Image 1 (cartoon, rainbow, N blue to C red):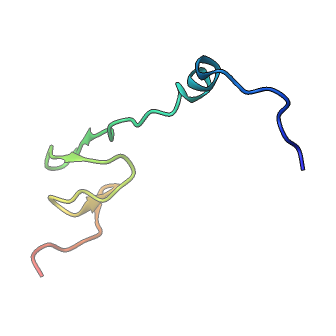
Image 2: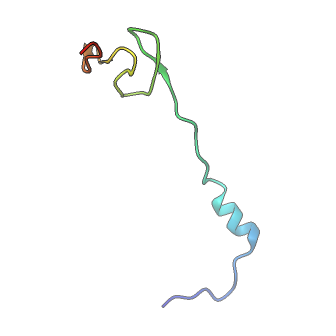
Length: 59
């Protein structure tokens, strides 16, 4: 089994892990109701996606 010969320093470990960050979800405006929705998802307010109704909220 491969075992490191020398210990990696804390700075080297932290440099490697510096890109492990979470990003906030990006929102776009719905072209129909102008509510916030996630890109490439059905609008939770009006139920439209790509110009057609996908989820009927009135039912």
